[in-house]
Image 1: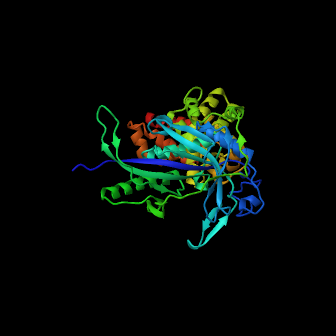
Image 2: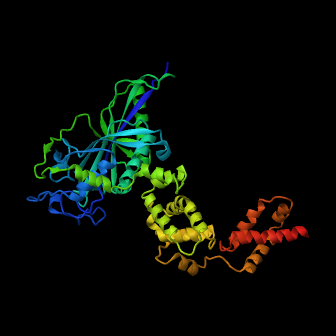
Length: 512
């Protein structure tokens, strides 16, 4: 008997905290990182008599976000009340958008080169502007909950897709693309680890009735089985793992002819399994009503056009630019760089500084610009990960990295020393110039050839076996000797000068 095949459908509801200075309907600072309950206005906690006033900054950011997702922007911004009762929502309703979302019919493009998945167009059903709730903090036990209203009323952009994705890899690439788009559009930092981006995932399966033939990739699916909503996912990796597990769980149940209800589930990243949060078999009635305290705001075509014209290039445009002249970056490097938080911003800033460096020849400047992507992607990011620092490239100021790269290209310091400098600046941030740090730590090249020659002699004397093998034709050992000398002088030797001295000494030995 042939085992039935299954088709998974995945949809998203993504909430992005807008990079506004104040809350959506009050003058309070958007103090997400402040001491709990210190950044609150009367309206944020629903005190009687307080009234909402729409933030023009938040509206502008929301329109920018809708445009970045290729949406048609509505001609009017109007709000509705979504009623539900929960401690983090003291008014008993959330001000959101239902009848007239801010944007409709958008899309996100995924490509093989930039996103490392098959070329895919992900439709965006709509985006809407709404207020955030307070943050619930569970302590001691599930029966005790603390509330922090600093987040209450912060502006959110909700992005809703149809269940149009079908595997966890494409879903993960889609989320990373949303993060990248929102960052380069200056709409949101989209950091899942700090709550800047939160997402709910709808997962369902359906049986494949007819399989694709050799002449056609089309196939027919049967009735969709009850869907599951996954919540409280703290990273893209967790989203992917939760989807993978949930699809497998549903298929396992279906193949046993077991029935499951529509439900909300969480994800345990330690066990890699989803777990029941609450049943959703009965549809919730939010009793939507028009929000009468916030007058509709007309969004003119000129207003939308002005915002569109003020937007810089987004990831797809940047990818084309970086892989073309004068950047000529590899596809791999361009992809990695653009997937780093504000990676292009950092790269562009350092590149600009290198281009203006005085005291270096054109050849050294060109070599530095060519090597820059590797310094950022491999060396800087590697050290940030090593020290468990967030991927904030600006942790090492651009002017300092520019100096390090140029000094290395000019052979004023070794690559080993350059890496040590990056490590030093991460462990001990300093406003000193790189030149002064090099002097203070005595990291510059040893200029005295006699001193280097003494060290070369010591290494050769301590390695008689390797010397014999080299003289018998094993030329690759030259790199071994160079490495040993560099280790002996703690990276302060010029590899070119060391190689010259080694060849001279080994040549003299060969003559004997």
